[in-house]
Structures are given as C-alpha cells and as structure tokens.
Length: 155
Length: 326
Image (cartoon, rainbow over all chains, first blue to last red; front, top):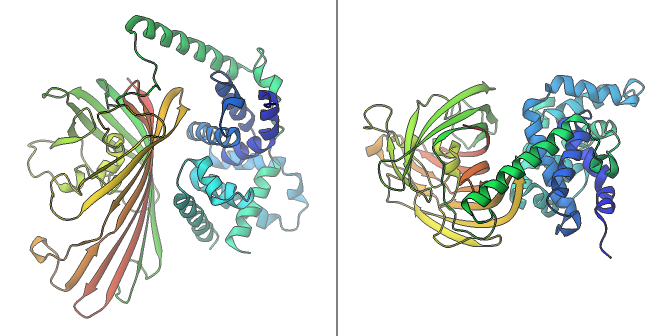
C-alpha cells in the first residue's frame, strides 16, 4: 500500500529540517520546510512523486536560496547556531568546532549543499547529483571547490 | 585534520542546532503562522488569477508539451547574479602575477536589468542590458565595467545582432553572445543561457542537439556541439517551470595568430577544450527564464620561444535568478 502524505513527510522530516538548517539557519528552517511541503501538497500528493526525498530536498534547496538573499546576515545567523549548541561551552575543542562551522557556513549555498549531501549524509555522488539537479561531474567539482575553500579559509 | 574532517565537524555543529521539524498537522492545519497564511492567500489569489486568465484567453495548460519560445513580453526584468570564477596556472614559465599552482578566485554579486522592447523586425525582441555589481571580493568580473548594451534576438532565443551603446560600430566580440554560455557577457544573460528551441513541441524527457560556430561573428574554426534535455518540471518562485539541462562542448583551437596581436615570443597557443553545463528553469507560459545555473571549465596551453610552457585552467560558476518583473 502506498504511504500517505503524512507518512512520507515524517519519514524525511528530520533530514529536511537539518538540511534547511545548514542552509538558512535554525530560526528559518521550520518555515522553509513548512512552506515547501505546503506548496507541494497544494499541487499534488507526495505519493505521486517518483522520488519524494529527492524532490523535497531539491525544493528545500530552492526555497533556501530565495530566503538566503533576504534574510539576516551570515554573522547573525551563525551566532544562532552556537546559542543552540549546548556542547560548545564545555568542549575543549570548541575553537576547532567554531572555526569549522564558520568555514562551512561561509561556503556558497551550492557548495554547502553538495558538501552536506556527500560528506555529512554520505550520499553517493549520483544521488547528490539527482537532488541538486546537476550532473555527477558538477557535484564532484562542487565538493572539490568546497574543500579548496575550506583549505583557503583555514590557512 | 583534513578538509573533509573539518567539513564534517562544521556540519556537526550546524546540524546539532537543528530544531524539531514542524509536525504534519502543523503544516496542514488552517491556523498557521502568519507567514503561512500569507502563502495560502497568495496561492489562492494567484490560482484565481490564473484560472481567470485561462477562462478568458483559453490558453493551454503550461506544462503540456508545447513549442517553446522566449516570449519576454515588453517590460523590465531584474535578475540577481552571482559569479564565481577560479583560475590556476601551472608550468615552467613564470607568469608573474600568479604563482604556479596557486588558485586565484573572483566572486561577485550584482544585478542584471533587462529592458525588453519589440524589435523592428517581425518576431524579434530588443533587450537592453544593464549590469550593476554590488559586491566583489577580488578581481574584476567581466560584466563589471561593460556599459549598457542591446541585443536583438528572435523568438527562438537566437542571436540576431548587437547594437552598440552609441554608433553600433566597433562592437567588441567580448560582449557578443557566445554559444558557450558564461565565457563572456552573454553568460550573464538569461537568454544567453537558454538553448535555442526546436520547432516541435517538447515534453519532459525530450532532447535535442544544436551546433554552430563558437562566436556570432567568428564563424570559422571549431564548431561547438550541445545536447539539451528537458529533465523535469519544477515549481520555483511560484512558477511552473521546465528544467532544461544543456551540455556544451567546444574542442581546443589554435590561437597562435600573430596577425591578431599574439606576441611573437609566444610560439604556440591553444585555447580549450571548453565545456559548459547549464541548467535553466524556463517558464513556458511566460516564455522567460526564471533561473539559470552555469558551470564552465576551460583550459589553455601556451608555449614560449624559450621552450617554457604555461597551462591555465579556469572555472566559472554563474547563477542568475529573476527577482522582479515590471
């Protein structure tokens, strides 16, 4: 039996909110996810989608791009991460963690998306390409550039 | 710690701060937050307007197979543009400004404003383009200092001619459309991103190929080939769009021609191969490009009279997105 819209959403909700969080920050992420799901449901059932996960991820990415331009500055958004990161004040490697988070947050959205899908979710390149709507070669280039930028940022 | 480990650590921090996702009931409930209520109203208003338009003019639904055309109704269109390019040189020669192996990059943001008018010839459009760069982190992207220029295109998006800022004479090749989008100003033009459309209807899964000279004014030399495919439908910025992917390829070409200004201490110079992977989100009903993403890679080889060599590799990424239309 085909999953209901609710079942499909709940299966991917945690992944979607994390993805939106790394793209626009924790404050905006719930609204991004809500708007994306609402917009899809307004047109069709999630069960009608060939690949709901890929479609929802791609929709979150699209929505985040629009939000990214008009929302709070990177610095303000970044500070919100650490307010919510309870371990930050206790962790002896907090400096490393802050540095790494800042570097990742500074990546352009496309590179951040690709790096998140490949390095954090450990998705195969082909699946990341499907979500990003680009070729596998482009994903490889994105993650390569993400690494280059991280290296430059931290050098 | 490797870059990959740093990236994972960074994402670890970011994802730890992720809030709980909204419940399905919260999303679908009528008593939503103001923002979502606004969305409901917006969807309702837009839906009503669309229904009225369909009733009034009996237009076909937007995403049925249809013959695509760049309609660009008269008006002003503003696109946000993000531009990022990298450049790396390796080889035995000392280029001077860039250390061998060093990657230099330029990142810029700005807007492109198009003023579209009916062309003087039937079926053509004249597009005046004004580029404004608001943020450059280094270097000078190509579109920064180019004055307002005007192009004439046909309804298939094909280049007809360029009109200079004043006389129209001596118009530099730099700002003429190029079949490899992104290699000059045309890369910043949404119509420059879009493929020429065939005369027959297109649906998801359909593909077609195009080829031609690399430049609108330099017709000799290697020909580019391009494969285009309608890969899916997608709703973006409230518009139902066709997502069209194009892969352009241009073979390497010899550019060692002292008669056009190549100094005589360069004994061999080649440019290419070039590739460009371009995706456009095309609104078939409005006949406009809503967003375009471009990834382009180039390389060049130079050999000097002292036997030293220099290899240059460059990448360009451009994202343009329609923000306002009036």
